[in-house]
Length: 521
Image 1 (cartoon, one colour):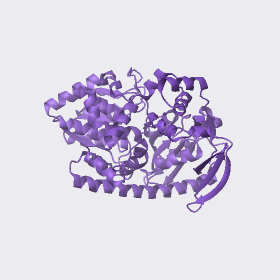
Image 2 (cartoon, rainbow, N blue to C red):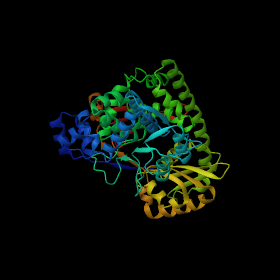
Image 3 (cartoon, one colour):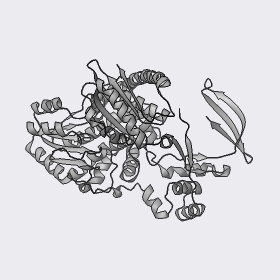
Image 4 (cartoon, rainbow, N blue to C red):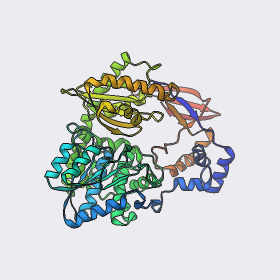
């Protein structure tokens, strides 16, 4: 495991003093803001604002007007439409939010979520043909579709209209759809480019309804759930959505979400973004990873409390199965890496294995990426010699661009800078490994691969008061690009060490300048 490099910020003392005096924030809170480059009262007000009136006009997204026109026309004609989603939390919440809204408007609307184990990622030709044969005349993608040029061409040839809503990176040539709504379009002038897939779908709903605030009140819990789970930056519009969503989550009108909170033991407890990341998201993701994403979709769409309770229990059971598979694959990969990985030379890990559960390798990638501090690609090879892989990366290495440099090797691939999926023939995996290693050699340095621990500031013992710590709550909700504060105190003396939990943890008694603290390691 790589050692971390501590990066300790040094907030300007005078700016912290002025910020604290003019805003009323405690010096500790002001120090965190200043350390993150937010050191004027106006900048702090803008950054910390959770005012729903700060959400932008959805029609600012390129092609949103076209998308609205197409959807309304299909509703008016009474034709069947299908929302084509994805099997992760972002894709499932996007699917359910849009389907629920369209049905409430009288649309003849169904949904289709590909099976992770049999269909793979994104749109497929068989799915296009099946949906058309079933009477679908409008296909609306959520959290997918932006790179599915061939599949969307098939849908158009068959006679379906297509509206794409996505948030992933775009290729140079966009699919030939009636409307392509993606906040990452190079020609898009929308002021916020970090919406989740469910965030873009939510914008479509707001545009259709013509009332953003009422739609936020109705769907903030599901939109926040997908936004946090997809590790989107919790700044700008996402901060507003998540802050509002966390408030709605504790009193949610979605019976499925309420039952999931009960089953996970979180009902009537304080809910934070960490509740989503570590309690709710793994249970929802487990359904997709184990090839049963429809369970989670049904959970959020059902109006039957008894059915919702059964589905919530099943999601928790699927999560236990996922954990078992994950630990098995992790142990296998760690065994191989002890033999094959050289931390002084290797800048990327690419491993393939037969029989690995393809729904679980993505989360194993994340764990290996955290452990070794470098990008990781794991590929599960089936009996037919087809490899389906997942990749995870670090901030200094754009995985999507790396895969694009090898696109001639893939049958399909997609994703973004930090996470991606791919399909590749087994006999091409060794060449893929070689080319990715060569790409990494010229695109990232060993120094950039050393994980960093970002510390907001050094603190003195007298700063750690109940009032100061509680005042940090103004920074919430936490998440990507707005992490929980990390502080550092140097030159403390260890007075006592007490082993806990069979030596897996340690309690420390510490002293500095006459003040005593207890700590857990």
